[in-house]
Amino acid sequence: MVGYLVEVVLLLQCFVGLAIVCDEYMVPALETLCRRWGIREDVAGATFMAFGSAAPEIIVNAVATIQSMSGGTAGDAQTTNLGVSAILGSGMIAFSVIPATCAFSSSAPLMLKRRPLLRDEGFYTLSLLTLIFIIWDGLVVFSECVMLVTIYLFYLSVVIFATPVRRYYRKFKGLVVKDNSSFSEKIASGGKFSGVETAIDLQQPLISPAGELESAEETAKDMHNTEEGGDSAVGKAVKIFAFPLSCIFKVTCPNAEEGARFENLYLFTFTMTFIWVSVFSFILSSIIERWVNLSGVNMAVFGLILVSLGAEIPDTIESVSVARKGYGSMAVANCQGTQVINIALGLGVPWLLICGSSEITLSKDLLIAAFIQVGVVVCNLSLLLGVAICTGKDKARLDRKKAGFLYATYTTAIAIFIVVMWRTGKLQQ
Image (cartoon, rainbow, N blue to C red; front, side, top):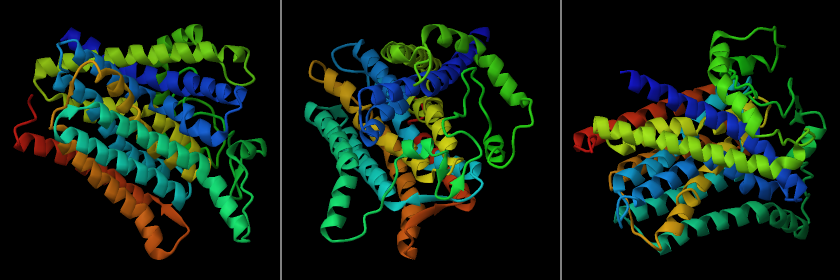
């Protein structure tokens, strides 16, 4: 009994550690890297920043894939299930729970631009269908890995060149070219967006270096009210729980944020955060594998429900933080665009490096989760983009009523997955 309790605490520490190290150390280090190297904002967002958000899922899958190779010449399908199911579960959360949480944390309905929404959901759908094709025969081959990586490269090209091409086309047609300032310029201008002045600093994260998490209700109130002082009971509990990790991170990961004392150590900080994410991912996957062996429950169930929830903590923090400041499109694009990276790179790159020397096998049980995720994406697409197109609106509207429906979509998806796995006799491995 004591052993299980220790493992639960250790698992929670891994989840909290992933949230803190990604949000407070890895992302600022990557921001400094992009500015130092002169990388354009759109390129940085689709590459380095996306990797920072997707790091937990990518490394969990890499660790699970490597562990599956240790048992023989062909990868163990159950072990590989952990990484794939975690990425599918993260997609379910990103297309339902995170947008819904953003809507509830904002004081006004979020207005989402149609083009970024269509781009991210379109490429994610393409990635998901490719993954279904790969799972179908239960064997990963080199050409299929190349397909996944190619999808990401195509996605990156669209992110980089879509806006310049559209501006050139409007100029060629003699149309008015909109002068859209960049996100960085909006930050420098004092945090005004679409005529809405935020009540807080645009770079203030939801999670502090001490590890304190603010609730969604508290962040929504901050849009209108100043803090009255004092922490909530939940905030104090999280702060105490995260204190040991915060102390370790302060020693091993210098603050490389632009303007900070150790800004020049951004490469060292990024390396250390990558190591910490790898350590947490290895511990997390090892604990889950032990629970699977003891309980006999299919690895896909743990990955889809438990690991994905922990892995999506950084995305949730970043998206809610941006949403409550008026950046609806950026909040949704952050969580949904990252899912393209999760499948295309998080699965494609580790498989590409390994399948040349050893076979990777996948359990067809993953098809159940994959097809359910298709349904979640269709619901999201219909509710946001579909309604906007049918009503002729320039932007999709995400209010609390739609957010409630998205919460219900996730709950229903998980329930359907468990019931189908149970009815088909696949709940137990």
